[in-house]
Length: 238
Image (cartoon, rainbow, N blue to C red; front, side, top):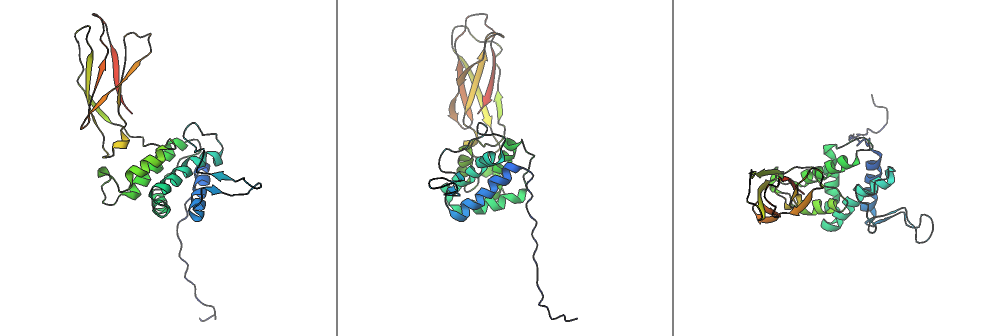
């Protein structure tokens, strides 16, 4: 039946539901940053020289700048995207920003640290151009560095192989040699390796930084100890 009304086709797209208030506020700011291409949002809000939020100075960093207030917490993740835009271009950043949301990373309020780490990983997945994230992505280093400026890092672990030394000669430095492997071919994921040691249960651990020998090999020296010393030590990637 012809009602005389023009037909209309409606295209429906699922809307992104934000269960985390901080993420919702932060992502709203990312839209504003892209639309204005200006790190200052709401200039003149309370008079000349004022603004609502600003992303080019006094950057917010996880976890020290978490306040429990969603607008403050949102500045951490929004700032990461802004800095990525400065590194690779706002159009490239925004394309990754949109694409990364298909992963639907979400955690409840209070778990922003884990959530922001999830988003970093999703950004890398969105940047992957050959279905093999293990060999890196075109903007991988820039993504990692931009998010790291705001204290957001990947919660990944490195496999550390080390042959224990049951005994060692007294009064000479003790070499601790290790092999470190990580799934991702991104060197920024692994800043280095440390060896922490102590010679008494009542003493605090002392830490020495290992020397990078290349190809995942590290070495560190525990200072020489007198005969009969028992050393408790462990290796930790960072």
